[in-house]
Image 1 (cartoon, helix red, strand yellow):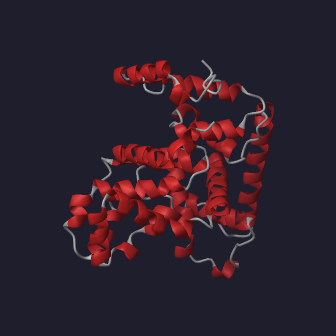
Image 2: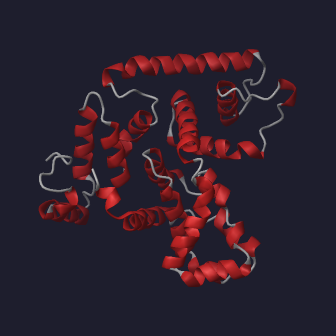
Image 3: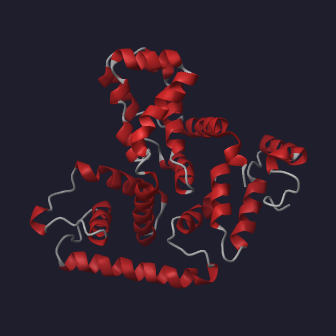
Length: 304
């Protein structure tokens, strides 16, 4: 069954499909149909970016296709599948050329950490490379780029892919969501008032509300906060067009650790805890965050 050709309504209207999905979930085959649907979409030539985005908003991407879908959605690969090998070759050549230029100019050498290499490459391409005499180690201003690079390195093995994904992820995030990011803390406050007003009052009264790790959450997109296995499910949603998911991940972290947070009265204690949340519970947090996001986004997510 082609998931995008449901006559007379969306997938949500099909009771047989809902029963099947519930059954699959029960017996451990969650995502069987979704994987098949994605495979159908990936056979399109040219690829339909809108349908791929909608799929990624609604479902977790199967790990075997995740990097390929990210590359297409970020424009690293074009919609025409028959050009992928050629364009992939160009991307590799461009990577090598930039790398060699930086080596010749002595911005990098064999002992430069790979994430710092990516930063210098990014700066060279965006014409923001500092003068060579000023190149101490990268400063705080670059921390979001470096955090995202470190996380991407854990997700992607190939350095060429890693650089292009970091570069295009950061560029897309700033271009698409740059104006929205400053408003995300206010949005978090709004949803927290709906879900757990007592916790919101505690954060306000203790002075912690304005000191929460917003940079870690909304500028680094949870890189350095969530382990990569959980983080990539959040980034599926960001790459396919939603920065609002970040608000719901932050919200779910606050809700999940409500009892601990209610027991801390000093803002610095709360911030310290939130910057180093336990890593074993994060898959459940992301799952609940996505459910909350779907709940508040309503039918928007189901429009295909």
